[in-house]
Structures are given as structure tokens and as C-alpha cells.
Amino acid sequence: MKYLIFVLLAAASLSVKAQEITFPKNDAGNIEYTNVIAVDSASEQQLYSRARLFVANAFKSATDVTQLEDPTTFTVVTKGNLPRFYSNPFNKTQGGFVAFKFTVQCREGRYKYSVTDLIHKQSANSTIHDSGGLLTNEVPDCGRLNLPLKSWKRLKVQTDQNINLFINELKQTMAGKKAFSGNDNW
Image (cartoon, rainbow, N blue to C red):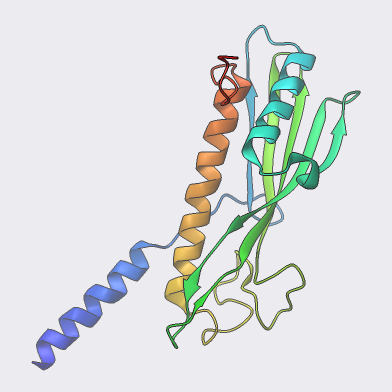
């Protein structure tokens, strides 16, 4: 019986360990998903228009999340969030979101994107006592009691998966392969 319990605990710890995520980081050690993508025969203006289309389709309210749209530098900056839910040890489901900054800079035949400033917040006016904080934290700012490590790791894995899906959608839109998602039969 003791052996069985030991094996189950070891298997559970391996499954949690398997969920470890290594975020891409910049020189300062902060999480940053970034890349420069070449798009043959696309002008700055075409890429800028596609970036704006992507933002309009990717967010519920593009006007609420857009921080900067600069047609002279062909740059779009937004601040969005990903909803996140987890259970604490008292079996209480808690919410929150992971906030992030998204930037697209367009040049002739190429664009650069970056997703930075990933931070877990319980609410818009969260404090260190109720939020996980930076996703680079090993232990959430609010402590293991409010946000267990297993939930914290799962939150990181889900965020990484969502950011990668977000980037793939961006790449398709910027390549001109993804049309407007609305109904064109009018």
C-alpha cells in the first residue's frame, strides 16, 4: 500500500514537472515573443493595414485595447488580456487574466511583432496579495495558498499556447492568407 501511494505521488510530480514551460526571453530576462517576418512584395502600408485588421479581429474591442496607431511609422501597439481561471485548495474557482503588450512595426517587405509584459492579475486593480504577478515568477506573488503551484504552472502553459496561437493568426493575416472572418454575402 505504501509503495502504491509512493508511485502515485511520484507520477503526479512528474506530470506537474512535464508542464514546465520555458518562455522566450530578451536580453533583460523578461518574457518576449518576437520575430521579424519577411513578406515578399508587400508595402509598409499593406502590412500596416493587415496589422490593423488583425487587431480589429483578434480583440473584442480594438478601440479599447489599442494604445497607438501611427500611420507615419507604420506601428500598432495594443494592450490585451487573456482570461484565466483556476481552483485554489479550497476548491474555489478564481478568475483573473494575463495582461500583455502587443506591438507590430511594419517596413517594406517585412514586419516585426513582439508580445511582452505578461503579468497575471486577479482584477484591474489587483495587488501583489491576490495576483500571480510576472509569469517569470517561480512562485506566484499571492502565494501558494491562493494560487497553487500546479495551477500556476498550468496557467503558464495555457498562456504560452494561447500566445503561440495568437502569433500564428497574426502571421496568416500579415501574409494575406486570412480574409475577414465576417460574411461577405451581402
